[in-house]
Amino acid sequence: MYVAEERTGQRARTGTAARARAARPAPLPERVRRWAHRHRWFLAVAGLGAVLRAVTVAGYRPILWFPDSYTYVVTAMRPRPDLVRPAGYSMFLRLLEPLHDFGAVAIAQHLLGLATGALVYVTVLRLGGRAWLGALAAAPVLLDAYQIELEHLLVSDTLFMFLVASAVCLAVWRPPGQGGAVAIGLLIAAAALTRTVGLALVAVLAFFVFRYGSRAVRRTRLLGAFALAALVPIVAYSGWFYATHHRIGIVGSNGVFLYARTMSFADCSIMKPPADLAVLCDRRPPEERPPSQEYIWNPESPLVKLPGITFLRETDALAGRFAVLAIRSQPGDYLRSTLTELSRTFTWGRPVYPDAEIYGYYEFPETTPPPPGRYPAVVGKRFAERYERGPITVRIVEPYAGVMRAYQDLVRLPGAVLLGVLLVPPVLAVAGRARSARWGLPWASAWALLIAPAATAEFDYRYVLPAVPLACLAAALAAIHRPKA
Image (cartoon, rainbow, N blue to C red; front, side, top):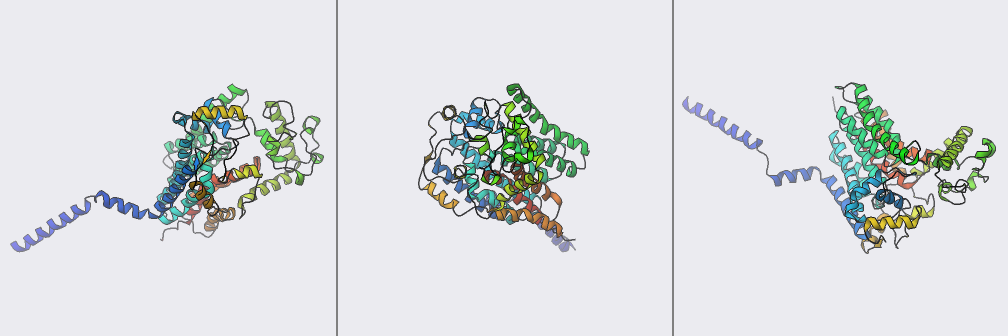
């Protein structure tokens, strides 16, 4: 009996020791190896994306310029609300101004691009997706050559994309509570103050917070927390804008842009505008007219010919009245025109639009590009050189620049593929394959980002890219299968 008891005690001690060894954390190198193996697909894609961005930084120094770039820099160096663009991106530049290096701005934007890809990947994993599915969803934002080029332009789109992706990913990670609703509201407010198209997403996110928020908190309290967090910064900025320009809003160009949008179809013989609006008519047939943006910036535009600057309060109001009359008089033409602009998003190729000059800014240049031309060049250049504390001429360094030009010829997400990605969630939902309805928020947000410019301004290739990570996230979330009963 004694021997049996001894053996039983030995087995007990052995079992206890085994459990202790199992509970003991593995050595750090082993944990790192396991982590890297689990996330190997994403690490490979993100690593390649990081290398491509490093090559871009080496090949185009310090940054690439766009016609809007001087406006952002001037607002950063002389903080006051601009009439055309909200100041969110300019404040981002202001934060980096102590570095006195536009190259640092480019690096920061490339890091935001990589972070957006990481947000997509982590969100897919948190909601039960496989690692390879998350890596696939993140691949377009990490590897698309035009995305990388956009990150190297001094424009607001990369910051806007990151803010929107952050808000959407935070909303779908888990049902937001009161603190989550506040964080989501602040993020979307920051996005709206970076690009005004973000205002369209406030309503989308408000509905999601109300419908899918935490059941531990009353729905009205969740919605109130979100609304306060989203609206207080926007209202505060509106107050600053009013104090500066004595106008209500966050920009003073809505009427002008909507007027330009309607000029693709507006027919004054149908509209029969009063005399004060008739000065804005273009008697040419719509098929002979230039792209919409020409009615804002071209000196021959009926609007630009009016006395004073284009964005005067009176001019903007006049343009807005004309646009509303055009839409009311020709609703079918407005709808067809909007769908035409939207359809440009989904072509397989990449035709030149809206014109060769703007299109060229989205290609990695072979020769030194000219400085921006939309803002008064002398003033803009002076403020940019003050920011940089030196010359701002773009230096093209080979062979790095040549590598990115060659890469851009090969790797991009065609518009037709993007349309296919956007069709995946509803198809899987109808087939009963979608695990939950959480794909709805990124899917609706992507469509809002694509439709709003087509309806209020015009199609532009750079307006498409911030919607891509949301569309891919929606498709991946919808593709996560229902667990077996």
